[in-house]
Image (cartoon, rainbow, N blue to C red):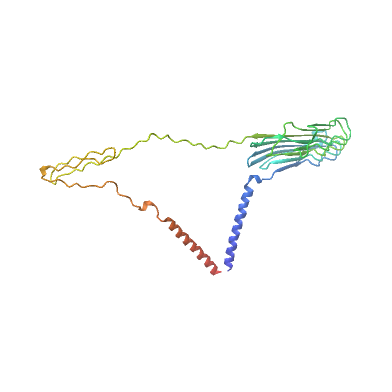
Length: 347
């Protein structure tokens, strides 16, 4: 009995293992299940005052059907405001099968007075497909450059730009508290685009450079390079040779007339003539043997035409193979039943 229960448990274990392995292959091997990347850096930093924060993201996404990849270069610098020699920068480049779908940087940074915030985002999407890019929507430089200073305190392009749920959101509520002219300078490069296949959102320099005397300089560029997919392979049919005019074959030659000899030394008789085109037998007949042998007319032996018919023999394949296969199946089933009965008896 315990052996029977153990056998059942073994069957259930291997079945469960197979199912789990199958699901693992389906969900792990599919490149479309790879998660997207959300880049985030330089947020909430350098808020003591008189500090500089400078961050740059360069992203290249590649999409070709289910094949995806991205290469990202990130540069982050910190130092004293308005003193480039003090900046300490770190840069890294990574390549992964995941696509970058959002960039979030330099938000809530450079506050405290006299700080400088300089951040850029450059995204290039290489897409193989038939999608048509559209202009990227923008929401930037709203409620910024307030608190005094020589006008214009804000210089942004495009402006005004206050689209809700925009692809690019930057430099809002920034550069407030007073300071110099044009202390908020933010741009989205003309020609920046997005697509339904891959829309990369940018959110940067929001709520930054406040506290008086600070500057905010940020820029975004989004480029979509579309490559048409290769044409689907076509199947061509090569016509066969044109058949020539039909001909009606003539009949076979008729059989020759039988030769005969006299019983002694008679001469060989002349054969019959060949048949005509319709396949009729020749009209020749046998002649009599020579008289010098003293023989009489020879007997004519008729030979049947055509070859001997071939039988089934060993070359015609195994006959009744369906019955043999059915018998083998019955034998195998009986063997399994006997094995299981023995296991049950031992239990």
